Length: 76
Image (cartoon, rainbow, N blue to C red; front, side, top):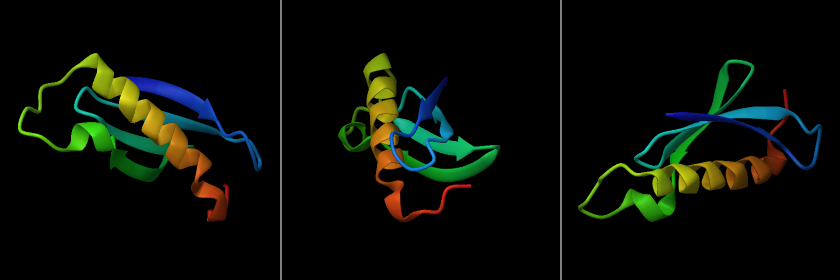
C-alpha cells in the first residue's frame, strides 16, 4: 500500500491523503475522514488480477482526477 498526499488545484486547495494498493484500488481521505473509494478503470477488469507497480501509479492518477472532479462537494 502506498500513501501519497495531494493538494487540490482549485477551491480551498486542501491536502488529501491517497492510499493505493497493487491491485489498483484507492481511498481518498482528509483529516481521517474517508471521502472516496474506487479503483483504476484500466486495472478493474480482466482475468489476471496480479499486483504490480503500474496499477499503483494508475490508481494514484485516478484518485487525483477524482479529487479535481469534486467541484460540487463542499470542502471541509
